Structures are given as structure tokens and as C-alpha cells.
Amino acid sequence: MTGRLIAIARRGAVRAPMEEIAEGVISVDGGLAGDHKGAKFPRRRITVLAREDWEAALADLSSADGLPVRLPWTTRRANLFVEGVRLPRARGAILRVGSVELEVTFPTQPCRRMEEAHAGLLKALHPAWRGGVTCQVLMGGDVRIGDAVEVLSSPPEHEMRLP
Image (tube, rainbow, N blue to C red; front, side, top):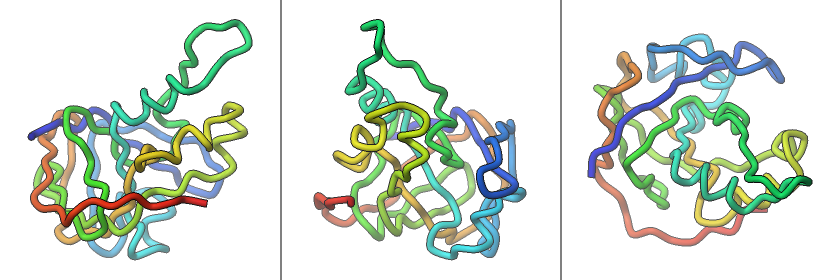
């Protein structure tokens, strides 16, 4: 199954707003250029969120007026937003985004900032790795909106309980 990259974002500092970009450079040593977290955490250089998982989490939320909750994907603070491909739910899985190869190291653990954005969002992101995946970079390169996204390999999936 091949999906596509539909958005890219980075943040230059802790608690800084997310900056959406049309293309970027991902390196083995620093993650997404201009993102403050990638250079600090080798096993968490890049975070990837699937549109389908984000929408499922939002569907679990309720609003005061009873209307569907709509939040921008950047609320999740991930680097890459993809669609049309189911992200693997297993450590060691390999993803290709354009020419970049990523290894899944963990499910992305949603933080309390999700609750600041909307009550219940933290809990809605916990089931089935809905918060996305964190990855180390195996092979760097350029990424652009529209790049193909595919799962190259995945160990058997398992359910992980997030805190």
C-alpha cells in the first residue's frame, strides 16, 4: 500500500508554534532541518502522523455545541503528515518517505499539550498508536509534499499501553 506525504512541519524551539513547510531536508544526525527536537533525540528524530488516525482521534472528542471537533494536524506537533497508508504498529518497522528511510522506534507518546489544545485529546490519541510513530533516520534526503510513503517492512504488530 502506498500513501503520500500531505504536510510537513517543524518547530524551532520548545513550545514554539509549528511552521508548515512545502519541502525539507531530513538527515541521519539532525532529523528535519530547523526542528529543535530531531538533533537532541537520536531515536526520535522524526515523528509521523497518519491523517486517518488523527481523524479517528478527533471523532472520539465532543464539543460544547455538539459539532465535530476540528483541530489542525499541527496540534499533534508531528513532523510528517501522511495519508493513504497505515502506519505500522511495531518497533523496527521501516518506512520510506520519498527517498528517506525511517525506522519506527516507538509510538509517539502524546503529551499534556494535547489537553491544552482540547479536553480529551490526550486520551483519544492513546488507542492503536493514533498519536503516530517516532522514528530514527536510516537514510536522509529531501522530502516534499506529494512524495510517496510506503511501509517497506514491519515486524508483527503488538498493542502497547501508553501511560
